[in-house]
Image 1 (cartoon, rainbow, N blue to C red):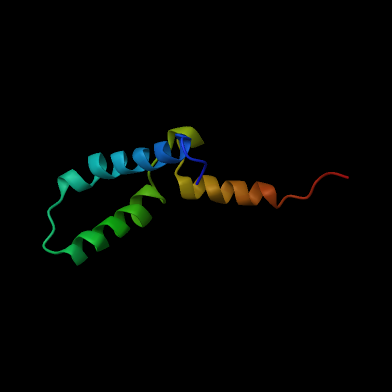
Image 2: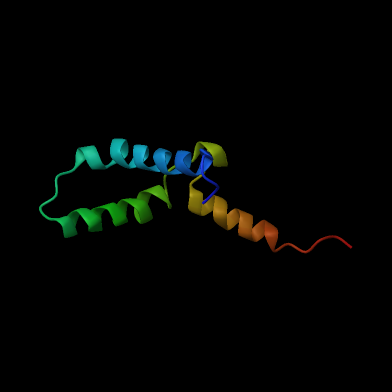
Length: 79
């Protein structure tokens, strides 16, 4: 978290919750709180982090971008 008055931390959270509501939450009905919590975790881990195209990452999912970054970071530097 940043300093008080810095908007960037809040913008990331607001963006995520906007996607959660428009892509998932408003299309579902839940029988219990446990069912809702489980469905939200499935959405985050199954769709949002794994398969959802991310505009800022060139249209690839976050998990793929992370893997590509980790792979490129492990390449040895030329001597």
